[in-house]
Amino acid sequence: MSQSQHDINVLREQIATYGKSLFDRGLTMGASGNISQRLDDGGWLMTPTNACLGRLDPARISRLDAQGVLIDGDAPTKEHFLHRAMYDERPQSGAIVHLHSTHSVAVSCLPDVNPCECIPPLTAYYVMRVGKLPLVPYYMPGDPALGDAVRGLAGKHCAVLLANHGPVVAGKTLEAAVYATEELEETAKLFLLLQGKNPRGMTPEQVAELEARFGRP
Ligand SMILES: O=C(O)[C@@H](O)C(=O)COP(=O)(O)O
Ligand SMILES: [Zn+2]
Image (tube, rainbow, N blue to C red; front, side):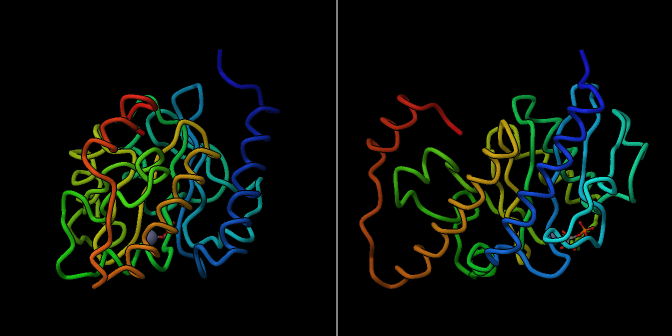
């Protein structure tokens, strides 16, 4: 059964609350970033294009039907196809967060980043929340080709890093997607702090043990 209007309004409020929390902590700036939530009827709530995540009006959050047609609220983020590509490949995911969080963006600009795993497994929590983070080649924001590029990776990865742009992170719930985005940003910071220091990361055995115990994110 699909959600009631009341349930959808609660989800709208939740997007605005998390958006403000992320913005207030400097995890995204200006009108950058976007958030979406899958709905039971096959549609989505998405933040409107050019909206500041810190000042979202829940009533103006875009609601799209299962075909991606706007049925309520303002025009959606220009990355709607990127979010939809990720949902198509990840039926287990209920929400997606895209930010321009500083340290994650910095990693996305490094020349020698490993495109299969932009940040090594430095901590257990990173392995549990984010896992292997692939790099998506640079595309202009809003380019539909970005959706196709993400589609090829999203089935196996809950998070991807857009080159010279920022992270896109899916979670079972919006809370889970936000937590994973925060963990990614903190680990990107650690990774940058440790540049040139030859850090001791998690061993493949330790990573495998975590995956066996907690599953892949
Ligand atoms: O970087 C961009 O332009 C977009 O990816 C973005 O973060 C904000 O775009 P809108 O969601 O369309 O405002
Ligand atoms: Zn962006």
